[in-house]
Length: 292
Image (cartoon, rainbow, N blue to C red):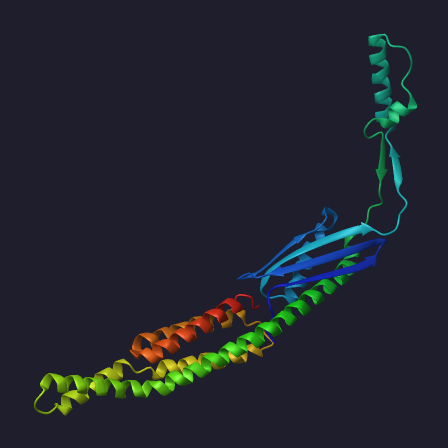
């Protein structure tokens, strides 16, 4: 089953008095790139998170958004810097004496000065968060992959229809190809008769001319190779492995074969069929850009 490269997933987990949330967004990209945005406190978990994502996603750009919120209040400690408070107090006294101002520094004044009172939260081992972060991450990945698979089914259905359509047109080209040589022989013989007017046509020379034309306009190999590429592409649609790059290569080869057919056939009917195939191949190429 092929997968799209676009998708979204979200996950939540609770533990250590916190709520961990992960959101993943995936878009088309030629390679596999992962960019994560997370609070500074979680930075040490970034590489682990990337490795988990890459186990499930092989192609595309993944943007991840991690957050952590306190789910329950924990006791905190207020630290008093007595030395700093004393320094503030003496400085204010000195300033009041210098300015000849009445009064003494108040308690409220002191506690309002920076860093006299500091709230100290208990240190936590961030590594202990990992099981809960991973749980939320796996939920997000599961949602992302599910969306990719759903979109992939739609893409596969569309691609299969276009591959079948090209196969049918290629059959028409194959049926038409032998008639091209016969038509050329008839046109050549008719022209020779008009030029000669009297006498007979040199059958040996005519046969040589027809043989040269038949060799130059022979598209059997290209038709066979195009069918082979179509067969390989259809097999890719049922593959459990990522096939985006292989499909991209096959589309290039399809284009190569149909261009050669168009240039060698030298036939209006085949040229019209070639245009139809090119149109379908281009639509396949656009869709393949979104396959993992």
